[in-house]
Amino acid sequence: MNRFGKGLLVAALVGVVGMAFRVSWNALRDVATATGADETAAFLYPFVVDGLMALALVATLVLTGDARRFALRVLAAYTLASLVLNYVHGLVPELHDEVVDWGRLADWDPANWALVLLATSLPVGSIYFGSDLVAKVLHHRPIEAPNPTSNQDESTETIMKRSMADLGVSTPAPITPTPAPPELPAAPAAPAASVVSLVKSTDRVPVGAVAADAPRPRRVTGRVPGAARSARPNRTADELLTEARKATKKWSDRELTAEGIRRAVHTSPAKARVLRDTLRAERATKAPAPTEAAPGTDKAAA
Image (cartoon, rainbow, N blue to C red; front, side):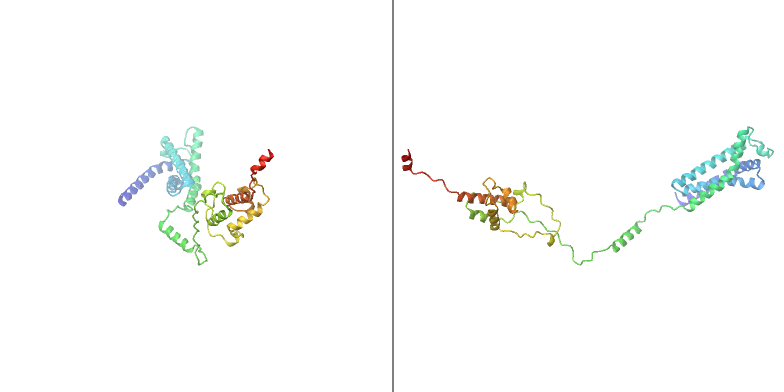
């Protein structure tokens, strides 16, 4: 609807409300006169009742939440009261001629008392409810829609004021883990020299070969500081074999296992198995071979 249509609608609404107020004003003035109001009070009485209805309607359009529900209750209560008084004015013809006794709005006493109480309490209620509604409207803060431009400016300002690092050097790139070397071949029962050369050629242990015994490797998160590194240097294959010989010198063949060697010299399971095979091969070569009896000796013994 364009602006002209809206203006025409509002003008029609004002005209209808004005005519309705004039009709209701006549009835409320006669009721106020019957309850003892003088000429000036009777003239202003309709503005007290119907005027508060208009104020409550405007407050309903402005307020929200609990305040809006309160304004709706006030509007409903005063609308019902005005309807009752207009209904009584239509039922009592004496009110039109202003010859009815003061304080007499109905023939039945309980109904008359209730109507008089209603007519006389409406001005007091208008003072209380009208003041409360005006205070709520004045203290009401409408919820503003978010402005995308202001939010963008605020975010830009936040980024500009964000604290930055004091270091001029950027953080070093994460260390890429070294790929695993090829799998170690099984150590044959050969002389000690060939086994030692095999240990020298393999400095690292393949991941797949020790997956069942070794713990799962941790993900690389950055450069390890020097204080956190192990103080023990990397040992060569000869040093490992020498330590294994000293640690297992008094061990029996049954005690000579890969797990025992690994715990004794603190090495990996794969190198411990290689050391075990090497030590067993050395013991096998050092054991005296069984002597065969001469044929003449057997016959002599027989």
